[in-house]
Amino acid sequence: MSKYAITAGIQNSPVKTVLYGPEGIGKSSFAAKFPQPVFIDTEGGTKRLNVARLPAPTSWAMLLDEVEEVRKGNVPCRTLVIDTADWAERLCTEAVCAKAKVKGIEDFGYGKGYTYLKEEFSRLLDALEEVLGTGRHVVVLAHAAITKFEQPDAVGNYDRWTMKTSKQVAPLLREWCDMLLFANYKTIVEKSGSGQNAKNKASGARRVLYTAHHACWDAKNRFGLPEEVPFEYASIATCIEAGSTPAAPAAAPVQQPKPTPAPAPLPVPAAATWAPGGGVMVEDVAPAESPQQQVARQQDAAREKLEKELIAEQVPEKLRTLMLNDLVDSATLRHAVFQRGCYPENTPIANYDPQFVMGSLVASWGKWLEFINENSDIPF
Image (cartoon, rainbow, N blue to C red; front, side):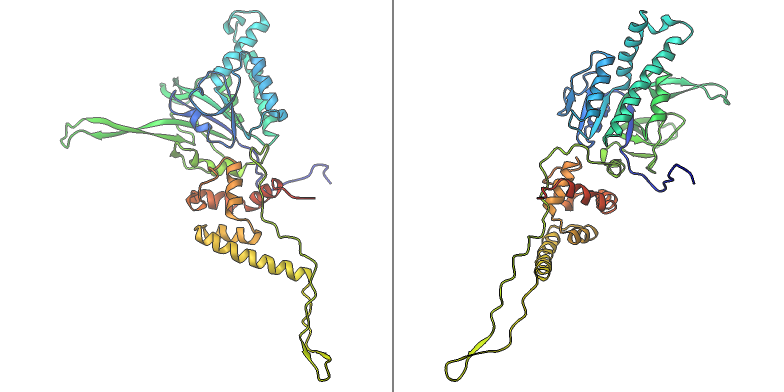
């Protein structure tokens, strides 16, 4: 018999995401929608965003130390965002050159400098793996650039989008992540007339997110996403929530409705009548209600009241059935959804995205219920 245990089935775990795209498209704003993010802003691009951030690292050692603080749990968050990889690589290059006492990465000669750079940058990915091990998601942002590319089996080269990192660091990021997402503008082209000589002109553009490999860019995902989706967090929210594990709840404990302890049974008075001669004649005596019967009666009453409330709030039927079965009211669920960074707490459940309701709340109800129970104020 093997000394190694065999496991099977899908394993939910925190998600490691790499997102790259041209400057100004909204990469940082997109990452800010992840559950309870904290940014390590290497380039100062989040100054205009209302997000939590650590001090901008001034050295490679400081960057690694901030990641270590997140791993230790000294920084309350559920998602760590590195903004951006190409600026982090600058700090890494400076550290490698300072250690060897050379002025630039090319001064090593024969490409040795880039080998040292690759080895040093791998330390950051190892540190991020340890952060993932604590139940936190990791997002790495990067700028995009157009570079020349030549297929080994093709004649000639062509332009394609790549991450704005060195040729040694980019493959590390591509291999490391669960989702490699490319954000770009999709231009809408229309003809300016109806004749044969009508010219094409750009009439607008929209932001899109590419999730699969293309000749013109690198992308991948392990969640079966469509190849092209709108550049919105809702497009990937189900993937993130499927791998969520509550690492550091940010809000107050959730109060879940619990059955009140059954009081001691009161004696049931017997029906009595006056007998001839002034005596009392006891007739039928009703049996006393047991504590278990009282609890069951109270639960039935609570469930009936809760069902009326959920129907009035237009909670979807499948989700309503689960909530009724476990006596979870809408306020409790909305607070849990807020804790995990999905929706503001005052958002009605009827306004939740149907994909979020079915793909996360209903499909992973057991995990949601476990999260609610772990964070409720349970007296012992």
